[in-house]
Image (cartoon, rainbow over all chains, first blue to last red):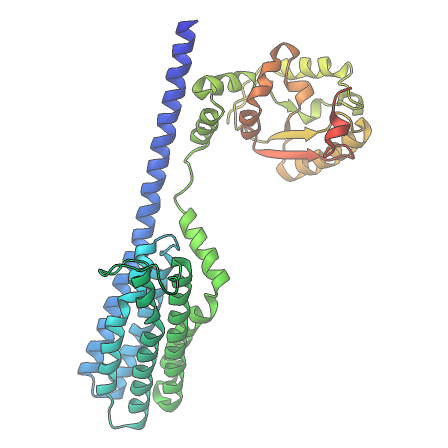
Amino acid sequence: MYVSFYTSVVFAERARQRMREQRAAADRRKRRIRLVAFGGGLVAFLASLAGVLIGLLLGSEIIIVSIIISIFAPAAVWGLFSMLLAVQPTDEDLVRGLSVNPVLGLLPFGWFLWSATGNSLAESAVLSLLAMTFSLTSAALLPAWRDAFLAGLLPCRSTRVGPRAMTAPACLSRIWLVARLCVGMLGVLLVSLGAVESYWYWPLCLSGAAILLPAFALRPSARRYLQARLARLGASGGSDDAQLAALAALSGGGEKALARAQAAFRLLPFDKLTGADELPGGGTAGGAGDALRRVARAGGGRQLGG
Amino acid sequence: MAASLGAESSVFVSHSWHDSRQGKWAVLKRWAERDTAERGTAPLLWLDAACVAPEDAGALELLPLLVSGCQRFLILAGPTYANRRARRRP
């Protein structure tokens, strides 16, 4: 009896250990996928932004600016959305950081664009509007500073007096709203620029469309769906065997229960059934149960592979 | 016949013993014929009356494993399927 008890404990512990390992492996896969989505998006965003800035600094010709913007601007936007999709509402520190720190970069970028306004009407208007967009975006994000202060995430201590801090999911929703508005404005500006610069009509219009598409498509419901799909990637428990082992461990029996289930598992080919009388009904199995079991046992004796 | 957990074409049949045999048979036959036509092979059923021997009634404790060992789950939902009172043994 003691040997049996000891064996069942060992099997249960082994199944639990296996579950822990599977869960850790799934967590590692999920972290890796999120890191790729977030890091890749961040790199694409920053590199494209740098490309736009360099293009603006180097290109005195509107043609060069148009080419650079039509290539790098969509890349930056898609990188930004890829990065944001990897951010979950539960990542409070990251959400607070994303809602606070971009202001430090957006305002100087807006001022830089303002100072870079040229002489031509189109160039001047576009850059001025972009500068205004970035400034307004910063203004929309500024309340996050107060929320971060209230949440106690800034160096200064939070206070219990006064309004409550916006929750991290609400903060993330605001970041998405601001990002979509900002990107939508950028897309409209590019399309407008394409309308003014008729020679570069198609590149600028296509670029504007590539920017407007995610801004319109990534509504809150679509964002939640994509985030859930991204979070589920790599979260599966592995093979069928591993899932069965996990289920057996949850049943409290571990590998012993799995072995018993495997031994007791029978299947009956449908074509061995001949009529309604063989099925249970009226609260009783009747005499058909024995016949069915005989068929099930003697049904060829071959093992069916999984 | 003995089979491995997760066998191809395996179907766990869930039904009420208090529903009529004829009704369940008609539905099961229609479904199985359509399934056979689609997949080219007859489905392998896990049917409690056939696949659990009386001397092995303890196997019912392993029902979650047996359910997860089947690829599909078929419900023959008759009038008493969702009625606990009707399914209670006298």
